[in-house]
Figure 1 (cartoon, helix red, strand yellow):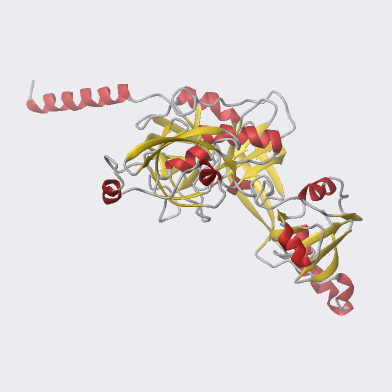
Figure 2 (figure 1 turned 90 degrees about the vertical axis):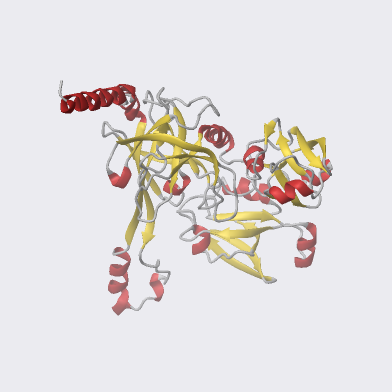
Length: 452
């Protein structure tokens, strides 16, 4: 045998050997694609500011032109992916895909289409739960939480750039990546992969080789707008907790400690009596917060919480955020070079249970907060609730509400607190103007508000 033939034979054998070791994804994709959906979200007007001039004040000669301009307003649409998690039509996707949507359409790979309603939205985890009215739908199955390992093969199915039901594969590059949001919040220990994820894959499932969902594709790192091999998925441990709470109450309540934390470097570890850099250093505690009440102190280094290791500072909010308010857990800390175990009762994140569950606020497009007695006394009011945020293109925005306004009356009923507001809101008619009274800079104002 010549040297050339020997070399060719060796290369051929090597190629066959590598090919034999690669997994076959055909069955996985064939079995799970029917449960993956393409999502189209109609977001309302875009590209032109909504006209607010009442028709009665438009001069007759200009009325036709005004109506023509209104008719030319175009609708903004976003596209993404999702997947069916139960046969009765519950669908999981990303918050950023549907958070601003006025109308949501989902399409299956057999071309059936449904209008979907929002069950709940959680911007902090970037997850959204939808529902379509259908039965006997195909569904996916979730993997057991926290079993995923770096190096595992994973497959994504979605609609990148609108190309329906595209599949891409790769491996898990890292687990527990910390990517704080624009608000500085950090509740999701992301899965990092090198799977080709592009715009339109958002909200789609990430499968392991057993055909189980291990994550929800959420973010990419890119300089071009397309994939460069850095994609991030929300782990199933977070998704299961969010889905459970959204189904039960339409919102997500998270555990809260009331601490400001930082990482521990080599010098800090040495000065604080640690054998190595580890844990979350408590730089500051909020007065009367759960951590302060439990006896934790600034300078403590939390190395375990709820029997889970805290290796980096970002591990602590990942753990605490999944705990229910009121749960008592052990916190192992290093204080002045010695280990201590302190029992901490986890609190509820301030305002979490009172803030509307979607990024567009409640039915009126508002996020609200309670007023304390001191604020009420200053305004000489016995009750009322303050507007924390008004979302654009909402009934609240149309009514001219602003952050800081204090609502005291809705319809014919007085508002004492948010419980009153939520009870009245459920009874408001649609397409009917309702009286609204509020205070702005000490002045009482009446407006009308209408749910479209």
